[in-house]
Image (cartoon, rainbow, N blue to C red):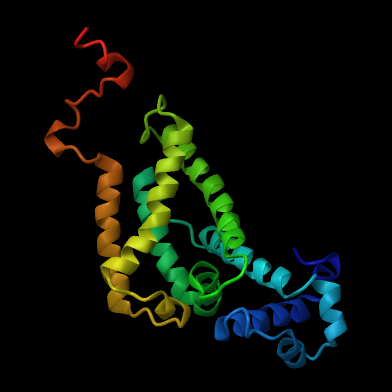
Length: 237
């Protein structure tokens, strides 16, 4: 995390450092990103940088966290047109907002993609854990919201519901990369085109259908009652 001195800077100077840092890490992989180049462009002494951040790693991880913070800010600034929409429609809307965020903040997203897919990226596991921790808290809130709205069974195991949501939604990105033959380096380079955006949304529709209705045939969904495994073993006694 940045030091207190960084947050005490005037807004204009702090924003300039952040913007230049995003450009530096978006343009170069972690090993090639240069603090010397950054401070020269920002017009500050190199010693001043270390009054704001511990080191390059500290700055990079702050930018990784910033991806999530900016996404949440966008959600707050552009709420859904129907605040009463069901939880599955809301999750679908989140995907759409996510693509809009990528279009609105392409360079910041490049930094995030470097953290996820960068070649020879150091401390990649730590970056992933930070993203995962923030995501799980968000998914837990979604589950509770769905229960309150009546879209999710109140008797369901909350931890299992969070696990399912986080696993499916987190792995969806890797699935899309493979299905659309998108090289991770394309994401890092910001080369995802509008046609690919549309194909992603089409797959989002399919994912949401499964999340909403499960895998059983639609006409059988209300008829099927799952028998707990613990009772099945007695069937042949």
